[in-house]
Image (cartoon, rainbow, N blue to C red):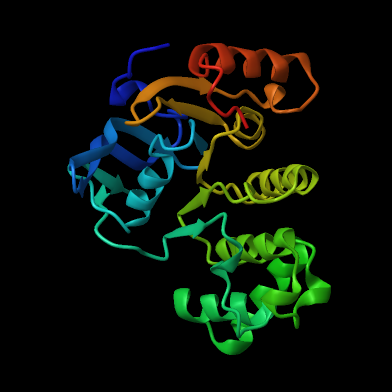
Length: 271
């Protein structure tokens, strides 16, 4: 396992501008027994157009880091910057897709959920927002469900709505917090493939959290592995396009490399 690299070594594509920077970030919580450190001394740089995956076992601070990038938590030490500016609060330039199915407004239809976000987040008129919303719902395969309410949808369909809403807002950074973890295996793979296609078509920048090596390789351009609690950077892996296709030798070799380097403990969940 590698020691935590320097910030300068953690940038992605040198030809692309740096969008997100975490500089020696630690996040701690007060507890009855003292202070609990969830994340310790994490530095990373995310370039525009990258899909960076935070990979690690449950409890290693992946989601905590994502919430901090979203502006919902403040680091105990260190700094998080987007486009060179410190992150101080949530903003439409960072949209999060969670794993929970209840992230949609239950009293609004599928179309209403996406349209409302566009009216608020991009200040579009109702007519403009509806046109954009319909276009994105068509792209995620839900054009025939625009009038359905969330409680009538399957888990995969709800996640498609959340993804359509996130992409429609055209954020600078997509934050994906294990969005497919609660889905069955077949639906999860289908959603991974659909997300990859959308990201490649739009050139979107994403920070994706998962504990599954297979998923990390499939959706990411680069993987940063975290140690078990407290989360520290353990190793970084590039994912060449040719390694992203399941069933290939390149995919299997990279999966084995990550497994051996990071998840040597058989008790850890490999996804």
